[in-house]
Image (cartoon, rainbow, N blue to C red; front, side):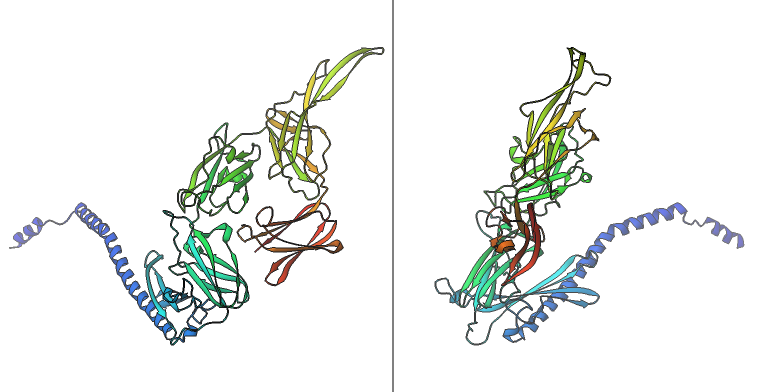
Length: 574
């Protein structure tokens, strides 16, 4: 019996290590294949549960608003005004739900007379949007929206004052049709009843009702939709009178973006020079930006930011640009016979990033600055002359007399004009260098001379021995230089006032006052003449001047300028 048991035990076989590892690998493969499905099912279940909570939450907020008295149904600081906050949050089961409430006036067209309604505020629309983040991603995966209308009991009440309706459209048209834009915030930034906020509905309209008489400024803010306002009508004025409804229209659109690569035309390599690039816009004038050597010739889309789209859906306009890089000739897109860009976009939101600009290198340059302020002078005329020195030996009564005889070219060998950074570039040939040893009869060498003229400045004298070029490098007595500098003395006095938004875009129609010596008092509006957002006060006597800007009924933000000579710039950015 004992032998039989031992034999039976010996005949039993277990699992080898290899078999165990293969089994584990099979189980792991099945588990990995099932994991995405498990995550998907979990996320879907969580999103459904969160969406159900959001719907109940939106419905409860709507019911709370419907229970309010009619004159309290409105947003805090909004129009219609009321006691409802625009945005709140609630924590439910460890998740944060964001509640955004929109309340706006509704004009029922059924009671219009000849298309006009003297009381364009028939009832109110309440829209509550609730959003919540997802379980895994953290982005919004659950949302709910509930709408309702709230009407006043009894007859429609006529409110005192006047009304302003802001209507917002998309700028880019499809098949020639305008599309209204909902959910755009519109602010009354100035006026007797400012500040107030309203939101556009599905018709693209936002109504500010029952405003006291006076001048108001309306400004849309479509940034929550990822859109921008047309640069020309970023804000509009409306003079409200009793019983009248005014309408102001705005255009918004998804911005386009522009990236460039600046390359050497001879080598094709990206340049590593600093400089200035000027974007020529069809609406808000020129936008000037600086680029650095560290950018290695790559102009990222963030340099200019979002641009208003022009093209098939917004025809008749185009962009352009100019590039002025240190050591290179200026480049102007409009002068390029084979331009890399036609200045338009194919659709709103497009990122135009395949543009390569080839710059021609220069061998010499002259920089012209204001002698008083150090600011670069734009548009100065720079003439380059060739000065030749010849070693001449002549026999005389006292023996052979030798010396250098110089002569300057009667006409300039090259002429250029300074750009925005005050530089003018030239492609000059190498000069003949002086002999290394003792000069002999007939030896010669050359240098370049400079003469500069500019409107409003005293003309420079001919500057002898300014610089020379050797091996393509500009040289002076102190060694190699990147540019030869000339300072001009101004013979005029003026103040340039520029008003800008915080993003650098110009503000037009801002009233500016300048007071100064001898009873000087002049008022102008920015953008009414000259460049957008600018007002120029010229022919000033020397002395202290005070600059003000108008806000509402007051002159504010005084700036004192000590005017002696030249142009002084005052910038208001707000």
